[in-house]
Length: 462
Image (cartoon, rainbow, N blue to C red; front, side):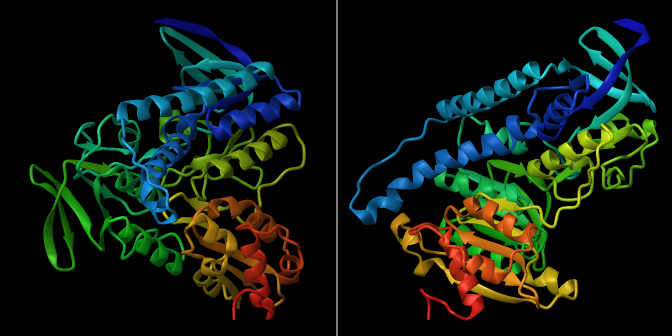
């Protein structure tokens, strides 16, 4: 190893090349900074390489496999056959196309990219190990976006074959006959739906009393119905004890039971990668959960900013991307602050879920009195033409008539997230939504219909 004795100056350093990191680098370069980005693995981070993108691609494959059963009542007869090796190749191609696109954007913006491991050793210095070369960078400002990693269970260690994480499940070349997923959050729900459609017998084990415990109870109930329709077993209120040759041992209110499994997926959440980069050495404050304390500008110290999964709030790519612009602006001494009214949450299960702003439970906990309007997809012309009329849109408003939350469960509702977030973020009123002409027939008009219901003048429901 060649050890550099002197530090190379770096104007603005970005550590981490995921959605938060590469967005921060691009924003800072646009503002005239000389940017160096260090990524230890692959540009695009977890989201593009082993998370959001390949998981959604796998879900589309699973939907295509399940399509014959959905369209048979329409008079369309067809059959499908799954080649998991080619599915993996398809996922690899999707990821490669997008990550190469990110690399091109950074290159055209003049960002210097280093593939290596960065560790802070002083408030203004980082050591970067790239192959057999060690380089010290002394930075003026740094934006840290090192993301998070899956939480591992001591009693259920991953072996990469039988007990695996989400990455192995996404890129596996064979289908397990019996798959048990430990964790009923959005990752567990999405993988359960996909694998059930692909042909596996799936069971979810969740320590809470329902799946999607971070969402409203009505949403959780609707999703559980959808999972059961797919044949997914639900083992809620149970804790995983450990794997054996017979399967996964779990404990619940009625004692212990063994669930048969030839593959076990551990998808219980994520923890911040604050320890891997040594951000505490900069003087940043890191709590016992690994989260970095930041102000509204995402500033952790005078020189260092932290964004994305390193900071409090939902570990979502779009949150990191929004924080990236704030941090870059603040590092350039421009007025900026991260204070969103809402961060949209989506689950690409069957049914899909979109949750924006407050739900009934959260509003009540905050002492906010709300009223709500609902529109069932059973009354939606577009939902009928799509062949899936289960689910609903719900709009919540406070006592002034301001929209504080929009939630939906059903096929394709993820595409409603933009309008829902805009309505909540801009403090739209019920009359704003009800009075805006929505195209027919679309799922989007269900938001208008729910607002009309809340306004007391429903059109397509009694």
